[in-house]
Image (cartoon, rainbow, N blue to C red):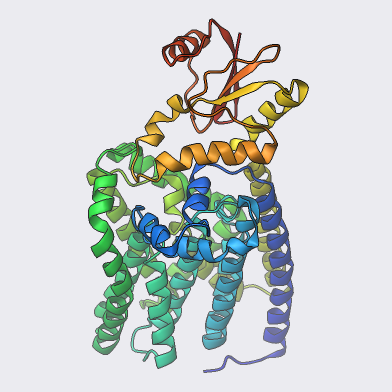
Length: 498
């Protein structure tokens, strides 16, 4: 059914379209700056190594299937190697994912015109969400999971409606979206499956048996690729995580989830305050009329899905440590859709000028969030921080000897999958070559004459041994070191031997 096109509605749609265009442009510019300017970290070198086009597809596929998550992102990363020979330009593939997600949301709005006010607030919230730029600016699967999660939540809200027959096109689109969402990241699979289950429960409570059967069939079909992946990967994942680096326990899971949710609602305070006010208004109206409105029903369904997702994440974490902040990125679309429902309700009760002012305030808050995220993202430590310091020393004294202190990466080298044993030295060599200095061969024990001898340890966050301990260990490894100086650089350190 087409929404009425009154003059006010036409103005509102045009005005919101202009606001979204400005937001999209700023989002793209900030995303590009962050992607090209952020220093790469270890997990990105892992993706870069596994997806490199030089290795045969069979070897690539074997490496991808030894990872702890489904292989879709590695396939896309390998397909995007034409973007550049280094990590920063390849991150721009995430901008394509963002554009496709925006297109999907626009299509959903076209199919469900009544949902457009909600989708406006939802899109603004998604663009300025707390983790969006840092995840955009990395060659990892988290942003793809976020984009697919955003579309999945919107598609469920639009098409899994009690007593409304889902069209064939909507059924296929929802099945495809869920199938893709389930094959990117295990945490995303858990969260989005829980949300989909909550929509199934909503249909059951509404006694919409045909709708329940259709959504169940969609879910089963969508889960098939994931089931096939797990049939091949489950044993490997179980072995990889038997002794894992993520800290376990209920307290860790609880605080990690709580802090991620708090960061999410603080990212756009206008959206949060307006959304909560709108939800209160909806609840008050429903209480007065003694009936549950579709908007509040949808918000409660999403809330139930959020609660179910959190319960599932904690349960898995108690069995195998699983919960870290970046894995929780698909919680944000659920929260943002709940708030967007409240914003849309509040906006309906406002006059035209106040309504326009609220829309402007939402976008301005998102822009402020994006700018803050850009600064924080560019300030994150990476391998280039320590490599730049070494490059400066080598330029000052070209005969400087530089050794990769691989012994301090033992925890990562010994961590499954087996690719870690190749990725760590690859990352050292790749970064050194980018910064224009050479590393000594692993068997070398050469000490420079007349120039410093540097021992470089990277990706050792939280590890800062004292100089005596480092010197003693280097002597055990065969280096004639008596003492030296130690400097922390980002998540690494440089020991200058004397």
